[in-house]
Image 1 (tube, rainbow, N blue to C red):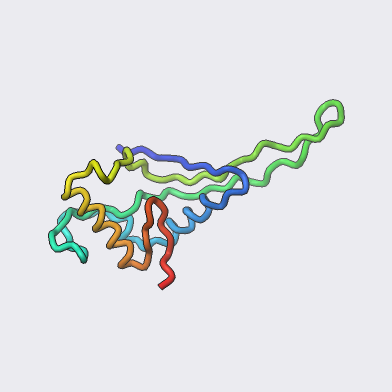
Image 2: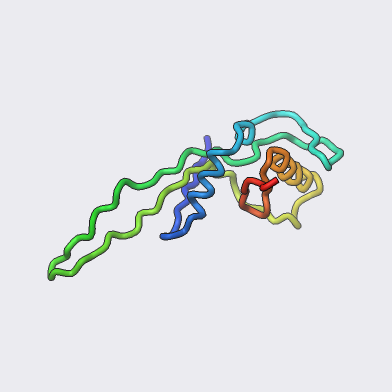
Length: 132
């Protein structure tokens, strides 16, 4: 069993559409579940293999919003903002790097190395294509 997280945006914010474009452009191996160990430079010791990003289940935009309605009394009313929705696998609880053991820090570093080798850089929480 797994859980799904739904992300919403605020009006005039482009972060959600940019994140959806990143997920759509990631190579397939970012999403693959694997078993075993891997060595990702600059690390010298093997670390467990795992998916690099949560499973992506789609980005959905609402159909055309209803036109401005005329309320009783002749007052024009705009419809409420309807956010697009981004569906992702809910991967659990966030962690704080300072509280991790060395092996977990190495596994996290190997994920950053793997995304960098694929042409992406991962500063903090967002992942964007590198310009190199």
